[in-house]
Structures are given as C-alpha cells and as structure tokens.
Image (cartoon, rainbow, N blue to C red; front, side, top):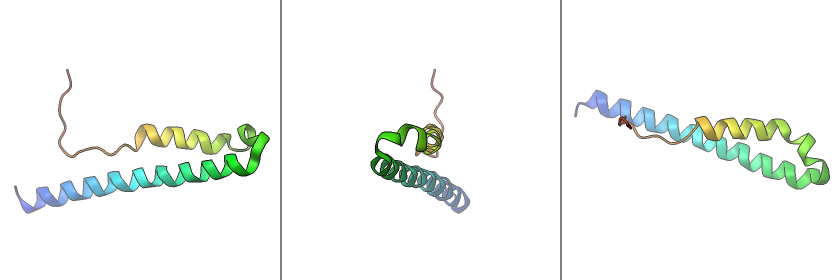
Length: 70
C-alpha cells in the first residue's frame, strides 16, 4: 500500500472516531439533563434527545474499505 492510501485511511478512521466521541458527549449531557430535570425531562431535554438520535444514526464508526452488501 502506498503512503498516501495509509494516510487517507488513518484520517477517515480518526474522523469516524471523533464523531463517535461527540455522540458520547451528547449522550452524557442527555443523561445529566434527565437526572436534573426529573419529571420535566421530556419537555426540557427533547432537543438534546433528538440531536443524540440523529448522531447515533450518522456517526457510527466505519471501516475504510467499502463492501457491497447484496
């Protein structure tokens, strides 16, 4: 493998992990919100919960190689 390919692979994996860690931070903030808001957590934490849901859909750790699934 060429050096350029290895650099691209490392960059792709690094970006994927950063996005996954961002989702983890949002999850931790959501847990704090649920804990502190108590009964009102559904109304107060709704935006944070929606953000977390979208992040776990999009920010999965993916490998570099793409395999066709048929």
